[in-house]
Image (tube, rainbow, N blue to C red):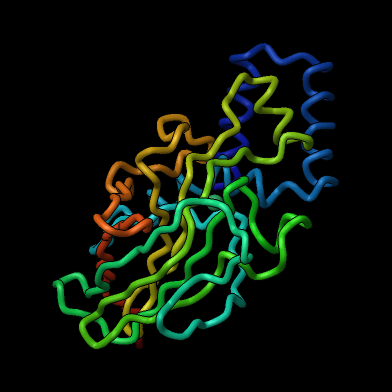
Length: 250
Ligand SMILES: [Fe+2]
């Protein structure tokens, strides 16, 4: 793999007639990415989608997509009725996500866990943006005996990757849109099943066709709907989990 990667790089150098000045500029940019601590960002934005599509190309159940750099594993396990923690004056349309978690054959999974996190109405994540309180808009919810889940929160906004570092500079120089469409992240897990890392994308969002992380999939686009007599939007989405991979035993 490493040898192949280098051989492809060497071929690209010849194909693009790379000069010493360009090599030195690229070398400095790679050093800058490391010094800015942006390797996780760069890899999650420009590489992870290809690994996800390859690793799970034959997996049963619902489609997944990238994890991204903003997951915090220690989010609190919430109690019913499930509602992600938020500020009293949290902006964004109120929404309830609900549906079922089943196995790949459609049998409900009791006690499946949905780890949910998303950006706020300004596109910022708690735990990463100093302007936000810790732990808001993150939490874990459980399904009931019929595999049903329900979680209340607010709709997130689209956001750009950081623009002031070397990864943002690359986008600017290359003329790439730095935006991610509005989305909610989930990891859906249940004993005996493969965890499903996924995102639900809001159909009304800009940037769906130009997601800088190449993570948007048609099957993951949801349409929040108004309901009569309520100021809360509704999204219904079911998740099906593949059976846990059987590791080779002797
Ligand atoms: Fe995200």
